[in-house]
Length: 442
Image 1 (cartoon, rainbow, N blue to C red):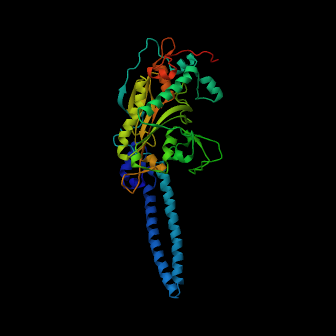
Image 2: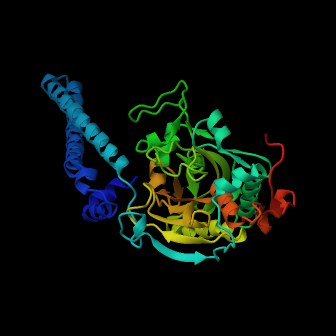
C-alpha cells in the first residue's frame, strides 16, 4: 500500500500519478479528503475529551477523599464516556474507509517511468542476439512439439481441460533441465539462496503481495474448510500460488530484519497456477497461456536507497539466462499504463519466437519499493537507529520455464523436424545434443 501520510501530504502528486496509470483520481480516491478530515477531527476530539475525563477523575477522587458529594462530576464523566464512545466509533469507521481506499490504490510509478496507456507505449531499452534465419518455413512450438511426440495438448485436455499440456520423453527432461540450469546459475553465480516453499498459501499472504482482494478472480481458491469473503481472512483457507513471489515475499511477513542482513536474494522453482480470467480467446494454441506452468522466481529484499541498483541487478540476472541459452531478446521499460498493480517500475524481457514472428514476454522484473512491505508489514532496523522502516521488495522471473522451453523449440528447430539442444543445456540433457521424435509414446 501507499503510505497514508504521503497521500495526505502530496495529494496533487498522487492524483497526477494515478492519472498517468489511466485512473480517474476522483473515482480512485473517492471522498478521501473528507473522510481523512473526519477521522483526524474525531481523533483530536477524543484526545481532548480523554484529557477532560482524566481531570474529572482526579477531582472526583479528591472530593471522595474529603468526604464530599461527587455525584455531579460523576454524571459528567458518564456523559463524556458516551461522547467518547461515539467519537471512537466515528474514528474507527473512518479508519476502515481509508483502509479500504488505500488497499485499492496501485503503486505510484517512479519518475523515470514513461507515461503511456498500453503496451504500445512501452520503451525498448536494449536488444540482444541475432534472430535465427532458416532456409525452411519456421514452425510454431506446438507444431514442433506435437510432431516430435514431446507435447500432447489433446490428452492434457482429456484429463484436465483446456490450457494444459503433457510432456513426454526428452520434452519432459528439457523442462527439468531448464529448471536445474536456472537454479544452478542463480545460486552458483548470482548469489541467490534456493528456497522450496509451499505451493498453497493463505489469504494474508496474497494480500501481502497485492493479489487480494483486487485480483481474486485470477486465482484458484481451494475448496477447504476455510473461507474468504469480502476481505475476511481465515487461517484455514488456501489458494494455489500464481507465482513463487507470494510465498517468498511472505517469509518475512510481520518481521523486522536488521540492516546487516540486507540485501537478501531468494530463488525458487515452483509450479504456478492462474485462472487466466479475462483471457478468453487469447493464445489458445500452445504453451503461452496455461493454467499451470513452472517458473524460477527471483525475489529480493533491499534497503530503500539500494533497491534501484538491485532492480538492475535482478534484471541482468534474468537476462543472463537468455544469453547463455543463445535466445534473442529485448528489454522493455513498461509505461505507466502497462505496469502491474504493485510495481513502481518494471522491465519486461521479451524473447524472439521465429515460429510466430514476434517477441513474447518471458520475464517481468519489478521494483515494488515499500508497497508490498507495507501490506505485509516487513520492516528493517537501520544500523544504530531505534525506529524501524519498511524495506523494499523486488521480484522477477528468472525465467518462466515453459516459455523458455517453447523459445528453444522455435529458435533451435531444424529442417528435419528435430530440435538442437543449446550448448549450455547439454550436460543437463544426459549429453543429448538433439531432441528427436519420441518412441513408444502411444
